[in-house]
Amino acid sequence: MIDRKKIKLLLFLTAVVLGLIFAFFGISAVERLFEERSALAYEEGEDDEDDEEEEIELSEGELLINDKVYRYNAAVRNYLVIGTDVSGNHEAENPDEYQGNMADVLLLVVLNRSDNNYSVLEIDRNTVMKVPMMNVDGTVNARSIMQICTAHWYGGNPQMSSENTVNAVSELLGGMPIDGYYELNMDAIEQLNHAIGGVTVTVEDDFSEVDPTLVKGQEITLNDSQAYNYVHERMNVGDGSNEGRMARQETYIKAFLNRLMERTEENPSFPNEIYTKMKEVAVTNMTGNDFSRVLNRVNRGENQGTITFEGEHKLGQLINDDTDHQEFYIDDTSYYQVMDKLFDLESVEE
Image (cartoon, rainbow, N blue to C red):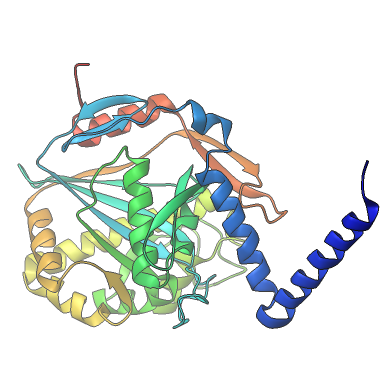
């Protein structure tokens, strides 16, 4: 028989405990409590799909693509460019108070060292995957099915957030190693544009509500404020979609890289110069010499173009904030085709 007095006592004690937590630690602590419980549930295998998966051990030089093991071209090196928004609390010095931003731009430069030719893989920020959730001590013991842009939320400082994003991209690509990363916040776009001396683009969207100086159909060398509006703004530009903004970001980055190659060809030490100018606002695991060496290699090869995964966009609530957000699900066939084109996959005999 149910003991109602015991139930009432239990409810009373629960209310007291929650009240003390609210009083001493604030609402955010309670939110973290539930987030940690959610992460723990995922880690402990309460997801039925996870229970059915078999862990496959990969050897060096192997990837897991659509549940099959492949070798990839050992001459390939990968460098991730990360562009983040300003939605987090990335300036917090206390790791427990820190929250990273969202990664609006994820571009992987794939360099083939045998001929120095390179391609750029543009990864949709809304790509759904099992995102690693790095703790403030750098460990990862849980993952959650969310958009890849959220990977930058986790960790205890900007460096760790970038590393968690690198890990997410590596896992998305079947375990592909990432040899270096370079992250810039959107707030630094003006400084980046200034350092390169302006980037020339053709304006293909209607910016009249945001920046009337960006006239649709005109080719323009962007000044610093125009560059920020061109790359960052979304809601009142064109159709207001993230896909439209991603297209502009791709256009800007391609034009920026072309300009960077021109400047590097004119002056092989220019990569070191721009690295130094951006050092205070960039987050990277690359030295100035690394940066210069990669760019001078790329400058000797040919750009093989930008490639993206095909798939399905839809609205959903994976982030669990009672708001619909864009979600992108990669098509398996496209996934294999893109990976094969970039990395020359070779099936491993079972």
